[in-house]
Structures are given as structure tokens and as C-alpha cells.
Length: 328
Image (cartoon, rainbow, N blue to C red):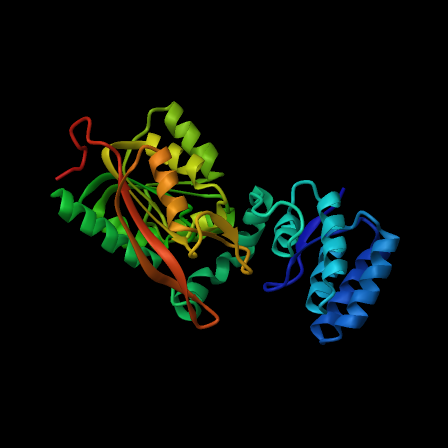
């Protein structure tokens, strides 16, 4: 059975081939790449996958190095081998293939890939976002919710709030003063552990967002405010998740979320391996979910390499068919 362990705090999570010699060759190749000798690293990795043809981690590293060397065809071939050896797409090979223009253009991200990505990132997540990426998602979402409440003449107080993809609790910290009960869910156990340490939430769950929402629907659980800060950039099709979110919202409830955007009509995979949704695509998904759009505003929610990232800040609501359950 393949075994899994962390090579370093900043390096990729490593899945063994089960062959000690192949594993050693892989680590030798990674050392060469770390020294800047990518040609040697690619050569060693090519030898490694000859020795262990189903070694997905080595195939993925070979694809990444070939891509860096400008060998697009070679990178595609290596990422295709990764995909075939890694049915759960733990490494994200399908995304790399899409980025290179091969295969499905906007594949769904696997749970294994997203969990691995954020488990790696959890310990330094807050510092990276706030200090290096100028992240302000929770702040702009709170502004959107405050504006929505003013326009609707609602009290800025919510009996129950759901933080979808709560991460380390950055949005929870921004909204906790407005909620009587705060619930968070995230796919990454390491991110949830960070959120739990802040003691902001009344309840935290580790799990996939769709499964959490389906269970909440079955149990007829309702939330007056649902927030998703920088979460839907990892979702290719917004309509299903928004439809489920609408079904757990109380009458007159508010949904607020951010997405990265681009001038087109639909959705595209960016070089950063995050999804950008065109405004028409967002509006269609909201309509399909029977949500009334309160506001869609353009903003720079974060930066990438010092350049502001085009984003949309969205607020929507469910019809007030019954008395609003906001507490006074």
C-alpha cells in the first residue's frame, strides 16, 4: 500500500511508490530541481517512472518540471500518466491538463486534491493571505451584508450563520459579532483545527460542502446568513452549491460570497488553478437557485504577485415567505 507523509513544511506531500529505490531516485530528482538543475531532475524522474510505472507522484513531478522547461507535449504526457495512476486526482493532474489545454476545460476539483492543498497550507494560511496577498474577503463581504440589511431595513443581527469553507476562521472573526450562533464547515481537517483554536464557532464540521448541505437539508436546518469567502474559486459549477445553500436558508435569509471573475460569459480555469466566473454565469446560477440578487460589485479581494485580482462580491437573499428569523 502507498504510504503518505510530509517531505517538509513547504514541500509537496509525498506518496511513496512502494519501491525504496524508486523513492530514493524521486527524492534525488527533487533535490536536483531545488538546486535549479531541472534538466537533470527530469532525466532522473524519467528513469524513476521506468522503474515504477505507476508512481503517480514522480509522474506529476516530471510533468511540472517538463512544463517549467517549456516541454508542453512532454508535460501533458506526464500529467496524463499521473491521472491514470491516480484515480482520486490527489495531485490535481486533471487541472494541470486543463491548464495546458488538454482534456476537459474546467474539470471539477477532487476532494482529495483540495484537502491536500489546504492541509499543507493551514499553518501559514492567515499570514500568507493577510500579509502577502492583501486579502480582504471577509471585510468586503461584511460590507455587502451590512448594505443588504440597510436596504431591506433588517436588523444587522442573525440568529444562525453558516460559514461555508470556513478555513481558519477569518470570515468567522469578521461576522461573529453579528451572529447568535456560528457554524463552520471545511474540507480540510488542518484548517478546521486552526479555526477551532480561535474559539469563535459554536460548531465546526470537517467535511465536503455538498454533503454537509445535503444533510442540513434532510434535517431541515436553517441559517439566516450564509457566507462563503474565497471558496467558490474552487468550484467549477456554481448552480448546484448555490441551490443547496438556498435550501438551508431561512425565509429572507442572506447569502454573501466572493468569486474571481473575468470578462467572459461562463467559467474558466486560471493559471493559478482557481476558477474565474463571468458575471453572467454568476447571475444565471443565482437565478437557478431561486435567489434574489441584492448586489454584485466588482472588487479586488486579494492580490497575486502584487497585482489585484478581479473579483465579484455577491449578496443575495431568499424570498421572505415567512417572518424573518433575525433576532433583535
